View (cartoon, rainbow, N blue to C red):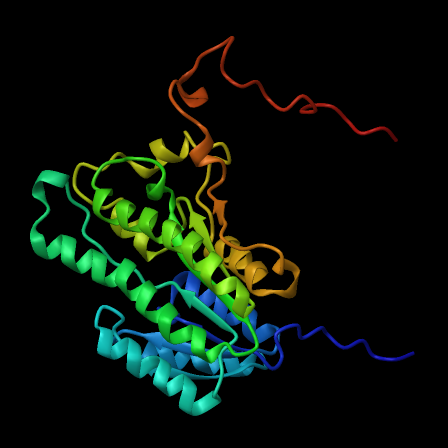
Length: 283
């Protein structure tokens, strides 16, 4: 009897993930490491957290390096990709995960709020893609993370939601221009995900309670960072070769519902229990 060897679908690949010392980026880095990949862990300022992420990547059988760079600044983006080029000479996957913005009403947004949100989210993605493509000489994958605020309007999210919508438009244009180079470009649009970001958002004064919002979501719960990162992982895999210019939505059904909500309905319109509830399976 021979031992079975676990598949290593990302062996020999080099992936750069911005903001990968925590959250969705970190979860993706772990999955790539499980697949034998090399991961460039980008972070803004927490050296210890980045080092712990890299240590776990190595424990899982992957390889990688950490690179401090604030993608809000163009010179940091150039330095980040220069390190990748010098160290590996190539790049297979670029995932634009780092994001930041201000959660305010439109009338309360200042010029610096608008400028920083654009620089951190939209400009950073475009400049990074310009740096990534020359390193993808054998083709590659580019994925950016967006959110349901790109499609739906809700309190305090205009500044970031508009930026996320712009990212999805850039994905479509990049997909067309980069396809001749063998590079696929896609987005993953997340709903309410259990992370530091959502915890911060639902702590904004005046925001409706999270439990009331989740009652409106068909899946009736938050998503996990792993559920989002697994979709990104699919888009980086060989299985997604014929997918480009698309936005895949991971939101538990949130973006398909509208008022009046089932959660607010009463009998006989409220959703009944599962039709199989209370029945015993056949012996």
